[in-house]
Image (cartoon, rainbow, N blue to C red; front, side, top):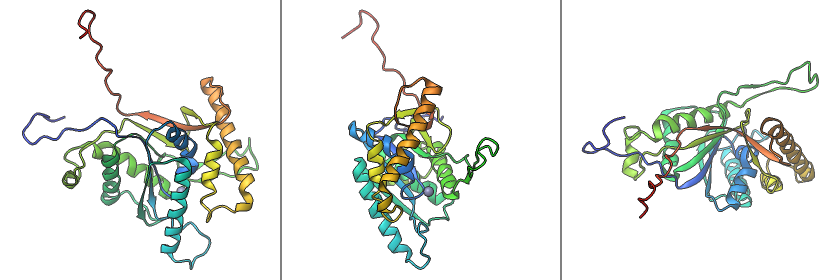
Length: 276
Ligand SMILES: [Zn+2]
């Protein structure tokens, strides 16, 4: 740490402006990972911003649909879903779907948004998860799956942006000219991974499904009831885990791996007799 009082020194800001920023690779990733928690926090008056890293242009079965048409359609769907959840703002970074790479440019995009919104918590994909494989002896008919490379790239871009770049006055100095001061995120919540933290989303689990249905290019309206049922089933499994691991009595939960990066100092309590 350099000298903050040196001539020309720029101080890192640690006071958040937004409660949460959710950064996912594709339109609907943030919904699957965090919609019920996002909607709950929004209903409590907390400011939540969603960021979508790619243009979603590989999310269709029709090879000759124009990329831009699909991108704009999926952005409209994502905005409509975000409105259902009460999200304050949505940012689309429009990197090419299926080709996301952790580069100087993609890190700058994320550092810019972290400095702009100053979220206390950032939610994102866990970049260390590559293979999801059930034990073939325990579950002979269950299939494993491989995590999408854009999800892993997003996790890495976001983590590198949080540390060291968003908080370092000498990183991406061109952003200072945009008035974007260095800022330190307090916590990261990873979704789609083993959880150590559970959010009671019993109030908002159906809001999540309602929002997911706004992604009309991805879900058939006839499957509406099935989707609601599936989301409740999944959230009930997470709630059971919350009971087993943490003794929490919850009907529906979303789970996250929570990592604290910055713990603000306790406000100083005046010594007895010294109150003003
Ligand atoms: Zn995705």
